[in-house]
Length: 307
Image (cartoon, rainbow, N blue to C red):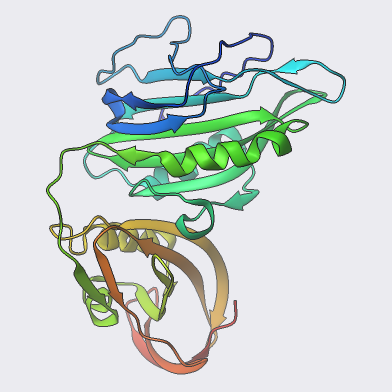
């Protein structure tokens, strides 16, 4: 049986929502807060046959609705934000859980969301642009965010029909950038992160290729002998300097590559966070790498990284 319950997307198309002033919304159960523009009803509603409380067996579902937007034939469409929260084991992995849910629903990955380009700021999270068709003639396009924090799996979807999505996309992106954790944390001092520190904490089966500075943190390229090693690397990066800085890790891409006759997965990740002081190493276009293969054997290879 799948460890992760199926989370249903509920999309409303005909209900007119009242106009509210722009306001911050807090969802205490998920320990998150976000801001809604004045076109949105800031009072979340619970779908029928669901509870307003979360326990070990019952997820929490909450829906927010926007004022309607007319589609190409003048039909009113109501964009929606749905948040589902449920408890997960302490060792739950956001990469594996997210991949399982997306595969279960057969939702395609149209694009990955990143902190630099899309403002994905929740720690330990994955973000996508995807779509699905509940029936012929209707396509729902949406941003999907999966995050695991404090033993809770959080799914956030911002959805609209494909016809009106271009009209609401920038508004959705502004809402995405406003999401934040509301856990009580002490102020943190800047913490220097170096290539050597990342090298020291990386799991077996991972070879670092490069660490390149971005305006919010760094982009990491690594070779992995298995996807499970990528998931472990993301967990290790999240915990790096955790007493000093909130570090967010986003998986940008994974693709198979051949390195010296052996098959690996090339993973590109992005790290950023508050109080993060990254000291990057700019890589040469070609370098000698000591690579661990799937059998745990180390070999020296001249590797030219092409994206």
